[in-house]
Length: 361
Image (cartoon, rainbow, N blue to C red):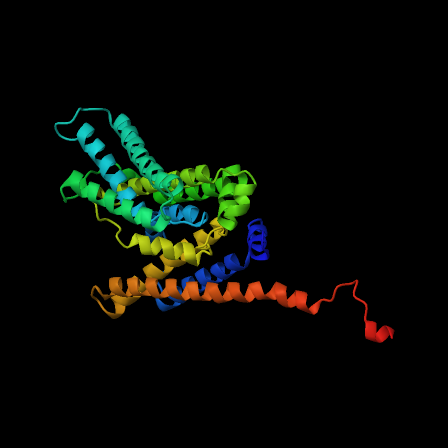
């Protein structure tokens, strides 16, 4: 294992690394800046609750991007998976509890809808995993194709229009002790990934596979099995995100969240997840989610105050793209500078066994 990979592996055990501290500073600066630019509007209880409801929609999907990027791949089908899962859940709810339905108790219908959405996500994830691990298709191409398949299947099922249902509104708009339920679900996902990635053999194998696939092979790790479970997990997370979509908007449609792919990739890169695999922390991803949410909400409020039109939406997407490129360039030069330090240090240190022949003479 080379020195760069070794440094990546050891940094995983540190509670705070360079990326995490930098992200914490970025999130804090963004929050303070918009609080000063928008006094009495940004830093309010109502706005904090609003952001807590919006954040899980793309925050949960970011974990699907993260876990696949840790293996050196990526899953571009997660939005298509989420929308398909939401449509299946909406069809189950409307079919079992709507007018002319089976008249099934709401609790049973809800359990079937949730199970159906998670099952759809799992099947889609397993299909992605088979394409990547067994057939050997490049992840970006495989998931780009399957994402189009899942979206097309959603259009075929619905015929185009959205399927509306309010049966999950208590999740999307409800709260427990003043804390929105969506953010509670997001926190549970965060805890689950902390345990999976840092306290399980599967998590170690994911990092190992992304850091050095050849070393993982020689150490006896079943790389195909790890990849299959990784994309299955990403699909399962996509199914959960679909339920959040349905609960938040009270409808399911095939083209919801089209910009979430760019957004979740931006979050992963901003969070310090290496696009080559092997490095990334949950704390970094959470701080990236918070930074993006602060930035999106702040820009929306600021642009609507300066230009009361739809310019805020387009400027936000422009800011996302610019931020993604800027962070990738910054990470590249930072990693390049850090990789030079060990070699420079070694060049200055002479071996202890060297003998100065000239001086001895």
